[in-house]
Image: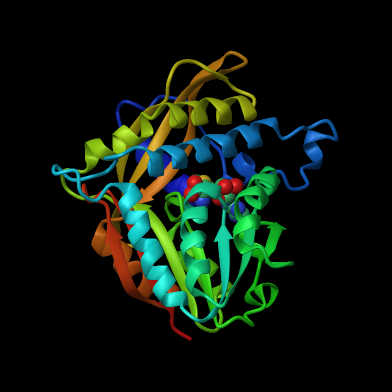
Length: 326
Ligand SMILES: C[S@@+](CC[C@H](N)C(=O)[O-])C[C@H]1O[C@@H](n2cnc3c(N)ncnc32)[C@H](O)[C@@H]1O
């Protein structure tokens, strides 16, 4: 069963959505600009670029807004936590030749991390892997000047599930694979495990950013999905998929049971119309592990051991650094 199937199965048991028409969209259809012959030569990837820009705007807010995700005393804002992660990565990279591999690249947080890492590492090669090729120019502009040396910036337009560790040439002293932007939540734990095991090689670390579920964090999670960028994201996905959006999406937390494990998932339901039919398009599905699950899943599915974790002051966002065990 795909993650979409698990969610639809849970929603149809919910009286509010039992009789509603529900449509789903795979990640690939939402983000990919790779050969889509059915769209014809006229397709201009306008929606894909808009989607990339919305993600970038969210990250700008994330590192720019003082106090975002901080505790009651104003400590532990996202900006400060990303700074702490950058310090930890700089210590890890110290004196080493590093390969930074970014899955689903974004320019803001990665520029913060890389700027600090180049100060301590002996060299940095950067590789972005994205199915949305419209990210290439922005990534080259943001990261190119930081990694400078010829050939240090690389961009692979591909589905990262098809890339292997041979393609990444693990000839550096340390490889860091990043999954930022709550991206891990878009995949089932087994799929993330498969992904990491096929990409990792010698001395590989994984950095993942997750919005986590814990008692008392429900409203914080739902508030994130009420951000105007996320509302616009849903409308963009609806238009891209040929629907007419009507109003704003509804965000909810749905309890699932996946391989005997209770896991919460945040879902955005965009009210839409197509021809004479009305219903909801599930524009985003994102698993929200508890902090304990996030830790445990690395060992259970990814053959990794967690070496460090950083949490925002309000506890809602965690950055986890794990080492792949060969
Ligand atoms: C939730 S967004 C996160 C974006 C970014 N990492 C951030 O921190 O904001 C997911 C990203 O992963 C990319 N993506 C999704 N599935 C992918 C796949 N199978 N292969 C390559 N890239 C993918 C999308 O293009 C998008 O940039």
